[in-house]
Length: 263
Image (cartoon, rainbow, N blue to C red):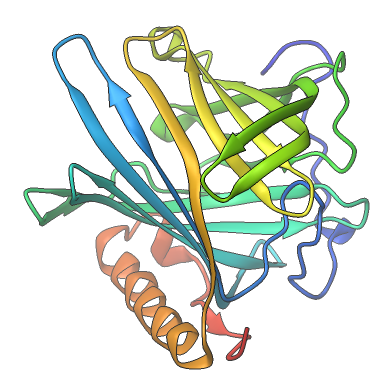
């Protein structure tokens, strides 16, 4: 799908019983919120963008694997345009896999649907590798996820390493750069994602494509017990709403459950 050597070798028995994700490039600790800010420049205008990534205390079993639930919110010029649940699990070798996404879309503050929902094992969708256990430059591309029903195919490769950069949260050295693209949408171009060991994603840039996006890590927050409880409640409401909205896909999954109440 993403060239020679990219065939998916998914084995549900290769995953841990716990949803712990401690890959140094992609650590997900429940109760952590990462905020990235930047701009998206098109030919006719530039949009201010803010994305919050919150690691909830929820888990969701998908195809027998207990995944950790991430809640992402995407704001453009201050308005919410997407609220998404994404599902990750780490295999025994240390690779982090993406098992699906439930992205609700909004226009003018009104919910308009979730047409790009995909879940591993449903409608032919396949989980893929969000982050390799030991990413190395010069190795073949790999599949981050594939959902033909919604035209989703993310291909990635370790593009560069030992990069130094500064963003609002800190200055980082030894940064890993992952190049991502969807070969089904060549006009979109490529994304470059910059990861720092122990922190995770610190920068996003665009190469080619009609829109030029740049996002930097603005802040990292550790939620209090009360804040995490509130996040869990809101994410559970989003999970429940998915059963009404996506009857052919999301409604076939097991409900999310609270696993972590304290960060």
